[in-house]
Length: 172
Length: 241
Image 1 (cartoon, rainbow over the protein chains, first blue to last red):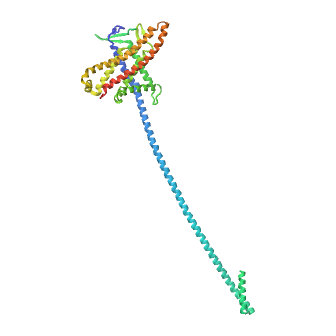
Image 2 (image 1 turned 180 degrees about the vertical axis):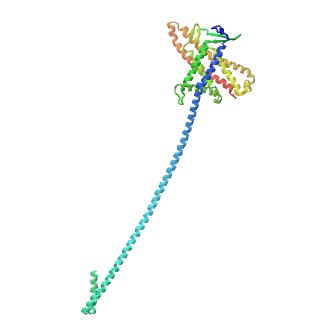
Image 3 (image 1 turned 90 degrees about the vertical axis):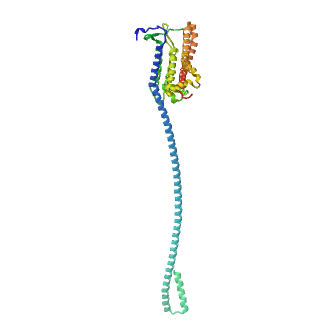
């Protein structure tokens, strides 16, 4: 360590100093670059790689999910279509049933009405006959009284009765 | 066209003297500083979506990664990535740094490419070759490392020994030669040809052309040095070749 050994341009000897200096500087530079540039940048590149990989994975996953959803929706649509078809069919069947029922009911009603009308007619006829008979009876009494009054022959009597019957028929 | 080097001697102890070339030390420091600044400024604001300088630096990282990957698989080569990156950036910057001008004070050459000195390039080359031996022993064991000298044939052993020295020499001297020749020619064009008005005019075009070519050569040499570093490392480290 002699300070006076430093002499500018003294010799053309072996450049051992340069070798040492270059080596040390290179190692320092290597360490610095590794610490400040290479390390962080490699980390960032790795991070980016991971990010891209995860993004691709996520995209793949969501694609599968979307496919599944689509499939589900399709199945649901099919099911609801079938259901609607069933409902329509059912309604049709019910409508048919109701139609036949209504028709049957209407027919029965008509039958009943006819029946009741017939019965009424019969009743009325009977009533009329009864009334007639009564009248005939009263007429007979009347005729008899007249006959007794007038002393009629048999022929006249018959003639009279007929006349009265006819009269009664016309009156009615 | 030969300038003196500003050297100082440091007698560490009796009979052992270290000679320092101050110009080399200055230029090594400046080149290292520029590389460091580029690296730090590029990675100051890191983002998932890279912008500006981060893109540039990531491109360099990928470029060096490509060099490593073309020689060995990434599992083995990943640990050499920083080394390759630093070598590439440092040598490229060193090559470019001497191009725009050179500074000569009192016949002492101060500003130049540090890689225009064989001592510097050979230091880097020896460092790379030493690293290749170190990693070979570390990763394969001493036995396998020793056996490699007798593969594929035993009688090739002397050639293998020669190969190690030849690799080192060519790795360092190729870089030195290219850059030194470039600077010499630039110096000649600027210093000798450019005398008088006519000389200046005549020197403009070849100087421009040669500077452009030197930029190209500087980039190529940085790439070659990094590539060969990875080749030698792979050659030593790979289990089967």
